[in-house]
Every structure is written in C-alpha cells, then in structure tokens.
Amino acid sequence: MAQVSIVKCKDYDRNRVEEAVFRSVELLGGIENFIKKGGTVLIKPNLLSARLPEEAVCTHPEVVRAAIRLVRKAGAKPVVGDSPGTFFGPEEINGVYEKTGVKSVAEEEGVELVRFDKSRRINGYPIAECALNASFVLSLPKLKTHAFTVMTGAVKNTFGLIPGLFKVQCHKNKPKPKHFVKIIVDVYEITKPGLSIMDGIVAMEGEGPSAGTPKNLGLLLAGADGVSVDAVMSRIVGVPPYKDITVNEARRRNIGEADIGKIEILGEPIEAVKVKNFRLPQTTSAISALPDFLMDMVSGAFNFRPFIDEGLCKKCGICKNACPVDAITIDKSESAINDKICIRCFCCYELCPYKAIYIKKGLLTKLLWQS
Image (cartoon, rainbow, N blue to C red; front, side):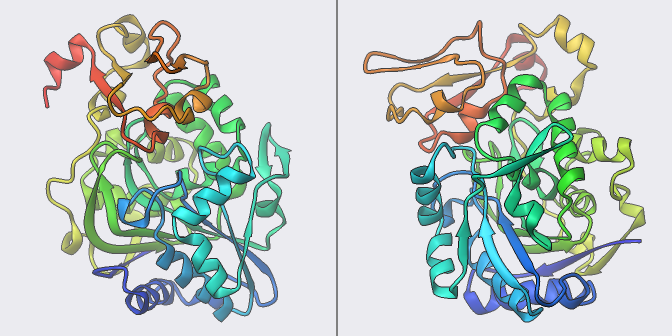
C-alpha cells in the first residue's frame, strides 16, 4: 500500500523545518530505507523563476537545507539543481539560484549547485544527465495552484528535469491542458524520484503558479509515490477528483496510486488538516468542463486569454522568450499578445515576474463561471 505522511510545521524557522522534514521521512520508515550510503543524490526543488522565498513561488530554501542534511544523514552526497522555466543560459540560472535563497543555503552547507546543461533522450524526451547519473532523486515540490493544470505538485515537479527550451516545445506540441498532462506524466514515469517531500508550509492559492496569493497551510507531505502525494494534496485543498487532471492521467495509466482509499496516511489525518475555501485558478472550471471535441467547437467564446498590462510591463522579455509560438511583441511602443497566434498555454502568465500578464474570460465562460 502506498504511504503518504503529513506533518505540521507552522513556519520556516530553520530548526522547525528540519525537525518536520526529518519527521515526515521517519514516518515512512526512515531515510535509510530510501537512500543508500555512498551514492549521489540530486535534490530537485521547484525553482520556477527568480522570486523571493516569501512570494511562495518556489520551494523555500530552508526546506532545501533540511533535505541536504537529510541526505547527509543517510551517508550520501547531495547536489541541488533545477531547470527553471526562464532558463536560457548560465546568467539566468545563477539569478534564480541567488534570488530564491538556494545559492546561500548551498554555500552555507557546502553543496554543489548543478546546471542541467547536458541531457540524454529517453522515449523522445531530453532528460538532464544530472538526474540520470544520480543514484537517487529527491524531489521537493511546492504546493501551488496552476492556471494550466489546476494544481502543480510532485508529478509536475519532474517536468523541470527537462532542460531549457525543450519545455517550451512541449507546450507547443500539446497546447491543451488534458493533452499537456500526458507529457508531464511521461516525464514522471521516466524519471520517477525515489522520494518527494512537498513544501506546503506556505502554499499558493488563486492564480498560480506565480501570480497567486501565498497561503499559510503549515504542512509538509512526503511519500515515495508522487501520484499519491498529489492525490493527498488535492484532497487537503479540496480539488474535486474530476478536475485533478494530472492525477487522473496517472490513474488512467495505472502509474502510482491515485485512490485515496488505498493510500495509508501517516502522521496527521487528512480530515484534521483540510483547508477551507482554498481558491483554485479561475481557469479550473473550463479545463474539465466539457469533452475536448466540444471545447474545440466553442473555443472562441468558451475560453481564457492572456493580456499584457502595459502599465505593469517592465519590457524584460521573459514572456516573449518563453512563448512557444512567438505570439508576443515587446518593444518601446508596445507590449502585446497576438490573439490569432496564441495557443493559450499561459507560459507567459506563468513566468512573468511582475504580474503584468492577466487572464480574461471568454463570453461563455463569463456567463457560466462568474467570479
């Protein structure tokens, strides 16, 4: 039976986080049951972009620190790395490591920060060699909403093991949420971390994964099966099962355990930590509301569209570089998204560091799902 531990941790105090992280794994049998002595462990946090820890966009650096010490407790060598959505070169990744606080933690703990600059293709996907060569991958997802996939957690965190620009190509190849999650589950199935410890101490609700609102849940979740961790996460925050498209894709393929009734919960019971009124993205209803063929027929009205707020735009060009179909114009006179080209993947919205991109509802969406 799959197991998921739930441990309370009220804030990011260093000692409290370390105690909670260690406890979450002890409930699963101890770190020695997962990591073998003498190996190299890739610690893979969710470092979406260069954002401060208090913004709740990325895995908090104190959770990364606790994971480093956990790996060392098992007698293994930890390294830390990710390929953020804005990674186009060494300067960008250095900026992400620095602003998220992970660089400081790595320096203080004497741990190498790795870059996913080399990859090998497996089943058509370039996977970072750092992950393939490691004896173990320890995933540190962030508990967040996601405008394109409803939630992002343990399964989606493995998508960051695809280096650089290929992630953009994936969005271009599969622009619809229900199709895109097939890629996410593909990558999870290839890489399958041996352990996931989810940072839900301060989560993100609303318009995640970067423009939402921090919400203090005071929780850490851990498990060997990322699908089970995500299923428990969704139950805690109240995502209806039929809207949990990533977990449902894993369930369809019989990858991991998605049935809450078949998951052993250790530590805090789910009912004791359930969150009331957790806000999901405004796109949630439309993602699962109709079958794909009906969505195609009414896509013009039953839709969400990204727009750029000229007053907030800093002309940084991150959204333009991230757009899979080159639909964005950024220059001194204009910041705009070409609606005729846009495929509604929301990469621009996801990665904008200034919240200058917002989403508008189509006509039918306004009528059916008024905020």
